[in-house]
Length: 277
Image (cartoon, rainbow, N blue to C red; front, side):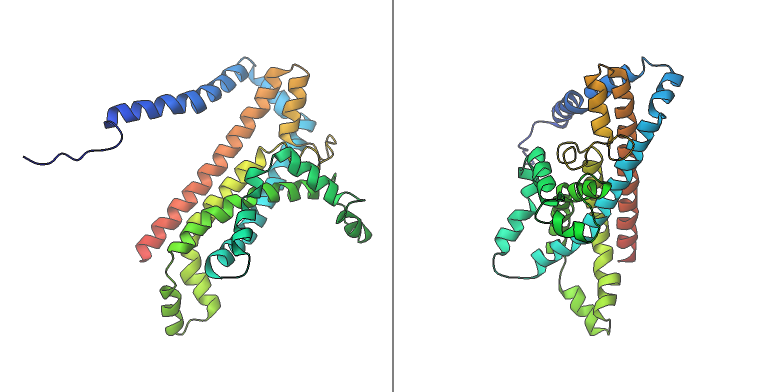
């Protein structure tokens, strides 16, 4: 008699049923409620809500600040992950733990700390003000806050890939006459690109919906520094629930399209790398 392979989890059907039930309870049902509430509006009402100047201004502000912060995190996160994986230095464990600080720190505390630090009278803000650079209560301050909360996503996504990347491939490239820059661009970077795109997408998605760390440092000035999550909270306080869900639906669609595009690029990059190998 052949030995039957035992699994820790029950059979596929039961496991799949639990998975679908849990995802429906946590993700699909809230999203369905969001769309059903928005469906109570006519198309013209929906369009008038999301196309008002204040809403459009908040959309563009959230979009370009999130993209700017995610792009900055992609560059600096790659550098931080590379240093943490490839080099040994004093207090490395402490530096590695500090990367996770935005995960553990309440976002409101982070927002208050950054506002205090970068205000005109703050320890850093007063020095920047001498050069005519204002951070707090400007879009630049929003980018600073979003960069702070998004960095761990890039670093923690890249670290396992860098740890699994064999140093011998770089040595082989060097033995064939490739410079360090060519080895980085043509040997190392293609292997890191899927993870880097994933970290970028996670950082963007987190930044696009961030509220707590931004609401203090932004200043919340309509048409200038008012982000989409704050506008949703404002409409909820005004008991405009349908208007709030309309803005939330657009944010959800933008985040989904961004994640889908990045995942598609990551799949294409992995396929290209595997075919080249």
